[in-house]
Every structure is written in C-alpha cells, then in structure tokens.
Image 1 (cartoon, rainbow over the protein chains, first blue to last red):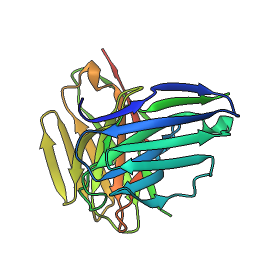
Image 2: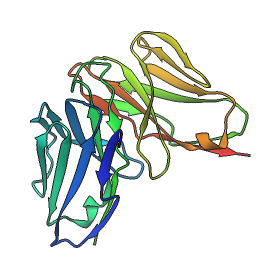
Image 3: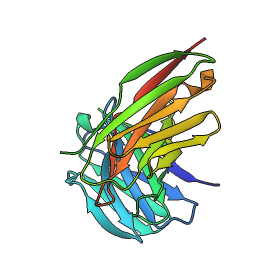
Image 4: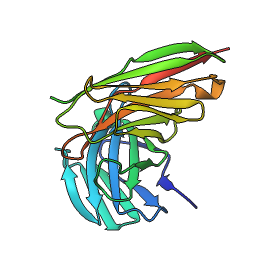
Length: 115
Length: 109
C-alpha cells in the first residue's frame, strides 16, 4: 500500500465513548500531522510530530490525545468528545517537518460524528 | 494576525478558463502551496511557488507576486473532474503552514 492511509474512514461515537483514529504513512517521511477540517473553515493544525517527537500542540483540548510510536504511525485517541468536535480529521506526512518547500501529503481523513 | 483570503465559491463552464485568487498577510513568507480537494477525499498537492512569476504544469498554472501578497491558480480547458475545492496555504517565517478556507469550484457543462 502506498501514500497515507487512515482508519476508520467514518466514525460515529457518543460523548462518553473512547475511540482511536489511526494513520499510517508509507512514504518514508519524518514528520506527521493531525488536522481538523470543518466546513468552510481553514484547516486547523492540531498536532505535529517530527522524528517521533511532538513539536506543536496548538492549544488542543485534552480530550484529544496523540500518540506516535514510530515515524510511520500516528494515532489520535478520543474521549468524552463534544458534538462540536464533529469534523473531518486529516492526517498528513512530510519529508522533513520544516522548510519552505516541505510538501505535506494527506490521507483521506476520518469523518467523525459525535452524538 | 495571519490571514489567507480566497473566494468561497466560483462557477465556470466546461472547456473554459478560470482563475482562483489568493491574497495573504503573514508574518514572513517561505512559499505558497495550492492543493486540490475533491469532496470526501484527501487534499492533493498541485503546486509550490516561492519566487515571483508563473509556474506551469499542464492545464494548471500558479502565479506569485510576493510584493503584493498575491497568488492565483489558473485552470485551463476545464473538465468536469476539476470540480473540487482549491486550498491556498502559505509557509510563514516560523515554517508554519497557514491555510485559507478553500474555494469551491463548480464546473457546469
């Protein structure tokens, strides 16, 4: 399999559930990202991992918890979410995690609905 | 604050040409990206500009003017499959990627 994959593609959960989103990249990149995409809004960067180390955490609520066990895998653990957290969650990877031309490659996303 | 502006929605006709504009105000500049995103799919990389001028890739071209804080994406010989959202993003002085909200392009036969 090539590129960036994400599972599940769709997820419906209640506010008291705990679930995890998974991302895997097969590009040999060193940086991985989690984004939230809501309708008609810019992509919101949530977390950045560079060489497995978290380098950015843009004031994301603690109900979102990232995990990066190696440079190919990234997880987003979810617990006690709110309905306003419903969105498309995109994972991306890039070769270097910095530099102007460092192009990010995206997975297809997980469409999350919180009831 | 940092800001990327692009039109929310545009409509064009199959076979025609359309220009999608993007203006930016950021703290520093280290390049500008255009991505295409079909509904329910991943954003895919289209182009990267860091120097002023026009970069051409087949039917798609991207232009940058750093002095004006302005870029456009030009799509020629439009096809129905070009119906998608087009995202503009700028790398600032801290190498953070600042995203616009995207332009939804609707192609009509």
